[in-house]
Length: 229
Image (cartoon, rainbow, N blue to C red):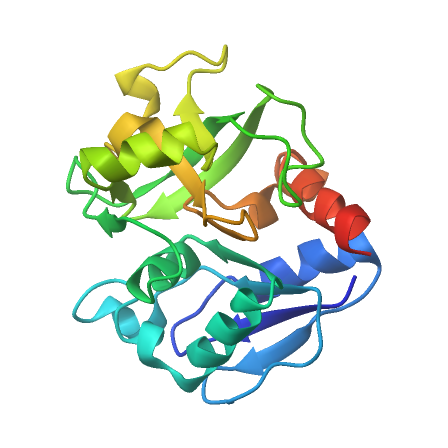
Protein backbone atom coordinates (compact mmCIF):
# COMPACT_ATOMS: atom_id res chain seq x y z
CA UNK A 1 0.00 0.00 0.00
CA UNK A 2 1.31 3.41 -1.01
CA UNK A 3 0.18 6.28 1.19
CA UNK A 4 0.59 10.00 1.76
CA UNK A 5 0.23 12.14 4.87
CA UNK A 6 -0.76 15.77 4.36
CA UNK A 7 0.93 18.36 6.60
CA UNK A 8 -0.53 21.78 7.47
CA UNK A 9 0.92 24.56 9.64
CA UNK A 10 -0.06 23.42 13.14
CA UNK A 11 -0.37 19.72 12.34
CA UNK A 12 1.11 17.67 15.20
CA UNK A 13 0.19 14.05 14.50
CA UNK A 14 1.80 13.62 11.08
CA UNK A 15 4.72 11.58 12.42
CA UNK A 16 2.42 9.42 14.53
CA UNK A 17 0.35 8.66 11.43
CA UNK A 18 3.50 7.91 9.43
CA UNK A 19 4.76 5.54 12.14
CA UNK A 20 1.45 3.64 12.17
CA UNK A 21 1.45 3.37 8.38
CA UNK A 22 5.01 2.07 8.38
CA UNK A 23 4.17 -0.51 11.05
CA UNK A 24 1.12 -1.70 9.09
CA UNK A 25 2.47 -1.63 5.55
CA UNK A 26 6.26 -1.78 5.88
CA UNK A 27 6.54 1.43 3.86
CA UNK A 28 6.96 5.05 4.90
CA UNK A 29 4.31 7.38 3.48
CA UNK A 30 5.04 10.42 1.37
CA UNK A 31 4.77 13.63 3.41
CA UNK A 32 2.91 16.29 1.41
CA UNK A 33 2.99 19.98 2.35
CA UNK A 34 -0.33 21.81 2.26
CA UNK A 35 0.78 24.28 -0.42
CA UNK A 36 1.42 21.51 -2.93
CA UNK A 37 -1.15 21.25 -5.72
CA UNK A 38 -0.82 17.54 -6.40
CA UNK A 39 -0.45 14.29 -4.52
CA UNK A 40 1.74 11.33 -5.53
CA UNK A 41 0.06 8.27 -6.97
CA UNK A 42 -1.05 6.58 -3.74
CA UNK A 43 -3.73 4.22 -2.45
CA UNK A 44 -4.43 6.15 0.75
CA UNK A 45 -4.36 9.80 1.81
CA UNK A 46 -4.22 10.67 5.51
CA UNK A 47 -5.19 14.10 6.86
CA UNK A 48 -3.74 13.95 10.40
CA UNK A 49 -4.59 15.62 13.68
CA UNK A 50 -3.34 18.83 15.22
CA UNK A 51 -4.36 22.46 15.08
CA UNK A 52 -4.13 23.51 11.43
CA UNK A 53 -3.68 27.28 11.20
CA UNK A 54 -4.07 27.41 14.98
CA UNK A 55 -7.78 26.54 14.65
CA UNK A 56 -8.51 30.19 13.81
CA UNK A 57 -12.06 30.98 12.60
CA UNK A 58 -13.21 27.36 13.08
CA UNK A 59 -11.23 24.17 13.42
CA UNK A 60 -10.24 23.07 9.93
CA UNK A 61 -11.89 26.05 8.21
CA UNK A 62 -8.71 27.67 6.89
CA UNK A 63 -7.01 24.38 6.03
CA UNK A 64 -10.03 23.41 3.93
CA UNK A 65 -9.01 26.15 1.48
CA UNK A 66 -5.39 25.04 1.12
CA UNK A 67 -4.33 24.07 -2.43
CA UNK A 68 -3.72 20.44 -1.42
CA UNK A 69 -7.36 19.99 -0.33
CA UNK A 70 -8.52 20.55 -3.91
CA UNK A 71 -6.19 17.75 -4.96
CA UNK A 72 -7.54 15.53 -2.16
CA UNK A 73 -11.10 16.18 -3.35
CA UNK A 74 -10.17 15.21 -6.91
CA UNK A 75 -8.53 11.98 -5.76
CA UNK A 76 -11.52 11.21 -3.55
CA UNK A 77 -13.85 11.58 -6.55
CA UNK A 78 -11.76 8.95 -8.30
CA UNK A 79 -12.17 6.54 -5.40
CA UNK A 80 -8.84 6.97 -3.63
CA UNK A 81 -9.25 6.20 0.08
CA UNK A 82 -9.01 9.27 2.34
CA UNK A 83 -9.00 9.28 6.14
CA UNK A 84 -9.16 12.39 8.29
CA UNK A 85 -8.27 11.99 11.97
CA UNK A 86 -9.30 14.57 14.59
CA UNK A 87 -8.36 17.90 12.99
CA UNK A 88 -8.31 16.00 9.70
CA UNK A 89 -11.97 15.09 10.27
CA UNK A 90 -12.71 18.76 10.85
CA UNK A 91 -10.92 19.68 7.62
CA UNK A 92 -12.90 17.11 5.62
CA UNK A 93 -16.23 18.38 6.93
CA UNK A 94 -15.25 22.00 6.27
CA UNK A 95 -14.23 21.01 2.73
CA UNK A 96 -17.58 19.30 2.14
CA UNK A 97 -16.10 15.83 1.73
CA UNK A 98 -18.06 14.58 4.74
CA UNK A 99 -21.43 15.70 6.15
CA UNK A 100 -21.97 17.43 9.47
CA UNK A 101 -19.80 19.70 11.59
CA UNK A 102 -17.55 19.39 14.65
CA UNK A 103 -18.52 21.85 17.38
CA UNK A 104 -17.09 22.72 20.79
CA UNK A 105 -17.16 19.83 23.24
CA UNK A 106 -20.34 19.79 25.28
CA UNK A 107 -18.33 20.33 28.46
CA UNK A 108 -16.49 23.31 26.88
CA UNK A 109 -13.17 21.78 27.88
CA UNK A 110 -10.34 20.08 26.04
CA UNK A 111 -10.66 16.30 26.44
CA UNK A 112 -7.60 14.03 26.42
CA UNK A 113 -8.16 10.45 27.54
CA UNK A 114 -8.79 6.93 26.31
CA UNK A 115 -12.28 6.14 25.04
CA UNK A 116 -14.03 3.01 23.85
CA UNK A 117 -15.46 2.75 20.36
CA UNK A 118 -17.86 0.25 18.87
CA UNK A 119 -17.30 -0.70 15.23
CA UNK A 120 -20.63 -0.01 13.53
CA UNK A 121 -19.75 -1.08 9.98
CA UNK A 122 -16.92 -3.55 9.40
CA UNK A 123 -17.61 -3.87 5.66
CA UNK A 124 -15.28 -1.10 4.47
CA UNK A 125 -11.59 -0.78 3.64
CA UNK A 126 -11.12 1.29 6.79
CA UNK A 127 -12.73 -1.19 9.17
CA UNK A 128 -11.72 -4.46 7.50
CA UNK A 129 -9.34 -5.18 10.38
CA UNK A 130 -12.20 -5.31 12.87
CA UNK A 131 -15.29 -7.40 13.51
CA UNK A 132 -18.79 -5.98 13.42
CA UNK A 133 -19.67 -4.72 16.90
CA UNK A 134 -16.11 -5.03 18.20
CA UNK A 135 -15.20 -2.60 20.99
CA UNK A 136 -11.76 -1.02 20.82
CA UNK A 137 -9.87 1.40 23.07
CA UNK A 138 -8.11 4.45 21.59
CA UNK A 139 -7.31 7.97 22.83
CA UNK A 140 -9.02 11.26 22.03
CA UNK A 141 -7.45 14.71 22.29
CA UNK A 142 -9.67 17.53 21.10
CA UNK A 143 -11.58 20.67 21.97
CA UNK A 144 -14.02 20.64 19.06
CA UNK A 145 -15.15 17.04 18.67
CA UNK A 146 -18.90 17.38 19.19
CA UNK A 147 -20.31 15.89 15.97
CA UNK A 148 -23.54 17.52 14.82
CA UNK A 149 -25.84 17.15 11.83
CA UNK A 150 -29.55 17.72 11.33
CA UNK A 151 -31.94 14.83 11.97
CA UNK A 152 -32.45 14.07 8.28
CA UNK A 153 -28.69 13.77 7.75
CA UNK A 154 -28.24 11.63 10.85
CA UNK A 155 -31.07 9.34 9.78
CA UNK A 156 -29.52 9.03 6.32
CA UNK A 157 -26.13 8.16 7.79
CA UNK A 158 -27.73 5.50 9.96
CA UNK A 159 -29.81 4.05 7.12
CA UNK A 160 -26.90 3.92 4.68
CA UNK A 161 -24.48 2.30 7.12
CA UNK A 162 -22.28 5.38 7.14
CA UNK A 163 -21.69 5.57 10.89
CA UNK A 164 -18.22 4.07 11.31
CA UNK A 165 -17.67 4.19 15.07
CA UNK A 166 -19.66 5.13 18.16
CA UNK A 167 -18.49 6.11 21.64
CA UNK A 168 -19.55 3.41 24.09
CA UNK A 169 -18.82 1.93 27.48
CA UNK A 170 -16.17 -0.82 27.66
CA UNK A 171 -19.06 -3.28 27.32
CA UNK A 172 -20.25 -1.60 24.11
CA UNK A 173 -23.35 0.09 25.51
CA UNK A 174 -24.38 3.66 24.72
CA UNK A 175 -24.01 5.77 27.85
CA UNK A 176 -23.72 9.53 28.24
CA UNK A 177 -20.71 9.08 30.52
CA UNK A 178 -18.87 7.34 27.68
CA UNK A 179 -19.47 10.15 25.19
CA UNK A 180 -16.49 12.51 25.69
CA UNK A 181 -17.82 15.47 23.72
CA UNK A 182 -21.61 15.25 23.40
CA UNK A 183 -21.61 14.02 19.80
CA UNK A 184 -25.05 13.37 18.32
CA UNK A 185 -26.03 9.71 18.70
CA UNK A 186 -22.57 9.04 20.16
CA UNK A 187 -21.04 9.22 16.68
CA UNK A 188 -17.23 9.12 16.63
CA UNK A 189 -16.70 8.67 12.88
CA UNK A 190 -18.60 8.75 9.58
CA UNK A 191 -18.12 7.72 5.95
CA UNK A 192 -18.96 9.49 2.73
CA UNK A 193 -21.59 8.03 0.39
CA UNK A 194 -19.19 5.56 -1.24
CA UNK A 195 -17.46 4.72 2.05
CA UNK A 196 -14.09 5.64 0.55
CA UNK A 197 -13.66 8.68 2.83
CA UNK A 198 -13.64 8.33 6.62
CA UNK A 199 -13.47 10.98 9.29
CA UNK A 200 -13.08 10.17 12.98
CA UNK A 201 -12.18 12.18 16.06
CA UNK A 202 -10.26 9.50 18.07
CA UNK A 203 -6.60 8.78 17.27
CA UNK A 204 -5.99 5.17 16.12
CA UNK A 205 -2.41 6.12 15.21
CA UNK A 206 -1.75 6.74 18.90
CA UNK A 207 -2.91 3.24 19.78
CA UNK A 208 -0.61 1.42 17.38
CA UNK A 209 2.33 0.53 19.63
CA UNK A 210 2.16 -1.49 22.84
CA UNK A 211 4.74 0.85 24.37
CA UNK A 212 2.14 3.62 24.12
CA UNK A 213 -0.50 1.68 26.01
CA UNK A 214 -2.35 -0.36 23.41
CA UNK A 215 -2.55 -1.55 19.82
CA UNK A 216 -6.28 -1.49 19.04
CA UNK A 217 -5.74 1.31 16.53
CA UNK A 218 -3.11 -0.58 14.55
CA UNK A 219 -5.77 -2.94 13.17
CA UNK A 220 -7.30 -0.03 11.27
CA UNK A 221 -4.04 0.57 9.40
CA UNK A 222 -3.34 -3.15 8.97
CA UNK A 223 -6.81 -3.63 7.51
CA UNK A 224 -6.18 -0.78 5.10
CA UNK A 225 -2.81 -2.22 4.09
CA UNK A 226 -4.39 -5.59 3.36
CA UNK A 227 -7.36 -4.16 1.50
CA UNK A 228 -5.39 -1.64 -0.55
CA UNK A 229 -2.04 -3.39 -0.89
